[in-house]
Length: 119
Image (cartoon, rainbow, N blue to C red; front, side):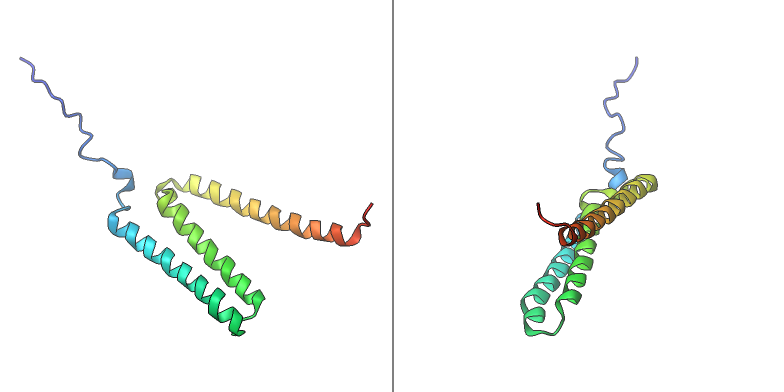
């Protein structure tokens, strides 16, 4: 007689592809994001109004901290960190070019606004 076997082996490696995303890691990433947000609020509400940092440096710091936060969100909560290197590179390079083109359009738009007469 053949034995009826209902276990098809899915229990041994559930979520094996995302084994690095444990509760501890989620809370660690949450803590890092919270710390970065607290630093941004500290800069916005205390450092810049008191004049300890110029606004151009403050903007650079905001952009850098926002990029770090975006990395953590995309890497861990959107699971890009666990994808293959080819997909990571394709998405990263695409977003770099999109950002580059946005900057170019803003620069060019400002140039045209200053040098073209209004009709």
